[in-house]
Image: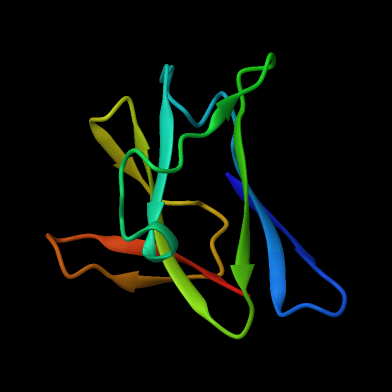
Amino acid sequence: MSMKKQYLKGKKMCKVTFRVPGKASMGAKTVNLAGDFNHWSVTDSPMKKLKNGDFTLTLNLKTGKEYQFRYLMDEKVWENDWEADKYVRSEYGNCENSVVVV
């Protein structure tokens, strides 16, 4: 799993591309991205499945912030990004959330 950041010149925005490799998706048919940026909606940010089996989604996020997020695979299994900027303890359950810093 990975994130690619592209800071937009003259704007306080960063284009972040989230990627879940096919191997990491554990054979999932769908992957959704949920986090602070979409009020933890499990349906607002579906990731696109590529021909090679990877899932990807690009979001424009305001800079100067940290956003917590997780991936939801097949509407059942929550997974963190293995290459997140950091991790913080979740308010719900005994787990951590991934964090992207922009």
